Amino acid sequence: MKKKLFLFISLCFWGVTSAQLSEQSQISLLTCAPGDAVYAKFGHSAIRIYDPKLYIDVVFHYGIFDFNTEWFIPKFVKGETDYEVGVIPTNYFLAEYRNRGSSVYEQVLALNDKQRNQLYNDLWRNYEPQNRKYRYNFVFDNCATRPYYMILNTVEVLVLSSYSTDVTYRDIIEQYIGYHNWTRFGIDLVVGAEADRKTGNQGDISFPLYLKEEMASSWIQINSDTIAPLVVKTNTLIDAEEKVVENTPFILSPLVILLVLLVLGAFISYYEWKHKTYSAWFDVILFGNVGVIGIVIFYLMFFSLHPLVHINWNLIWANPFLLIFAIFMPMKWCAKATKRIAYYVLILLLTSLVTTAFAPQLFHVANLPLILLLILRTIFYIRKPLTTHD
Image: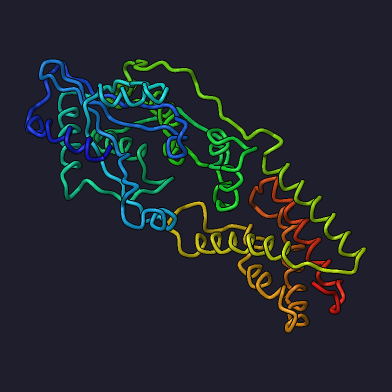
């Protein structure tokens, strides 16, 4: 519905595409602070065209997507999601972020008449149906990078920047997502070693608030011996209370829940050892679920187009092989073969403890109790007598 509204409103402005902006016009980069929804956690960027003489005040942004697209979730996981550029009156755009409770900042750009008209025409050309869609990429091609490169391509002169950062992609994820929550735990499972390299200035422009700082520190070449700030003025269009990153209550955090699961697994192991019995249900659920996680990690590593997921050391312990192990566990007729499988599983799990310390990837602390539980139950399965009853 929202997408249809944007398209309807944009048609109302189709007639202004042939207009030349007046000398009173200005073009701005808009930066929207993060929201509560998962897809809004990192904020948003857009370009505002304002011309009081021609009564033009519209926003172009590259953040339109449709949840109702056929196979949306599988396409998103694989990295084949198409986003679109949209155009909407500025007051409608600001109303949405006012309702979200997110601040919106405006940076007026130091563009001359020719540059403003060039960018204005380029944006409308980009909005034409045959040009409207683009293949979204979380890091390298998104709602922040598109406006940035549209502006730079229009300027066509040297742009200098004094801005620098010393952060990794995982650092930025933590800044917006937090750490002790299940969203971050899930992200750390599927995001690999590439997330732990420094972003560099060209990497952090993918994140709107970092792009805002990049623009504020940029200078444009006016002539052969003169440079001037790219941003001539900064306005706060919506001043909302800054949202605090919300972590899960500590008692419900991944670390605590998985520590409780480790204690439960230890208690079950002691009980079964004491009574010389074995109930496969706990291990089937445990190893089966971790095996499914391994399938997701494996798929992302080898088939997804998303960056940051292709070298993931979590695959050593969260391995699809564990699902096969879980399937054969309750089958008495293949108990000897399953025990042999258990030795390979144990080697994988022990290796993962080493990689946790030495691999070029940061792992979530909640991984540790889960890996220890898997090791405990694998050793118990190996040591249990073949004659134990279910």
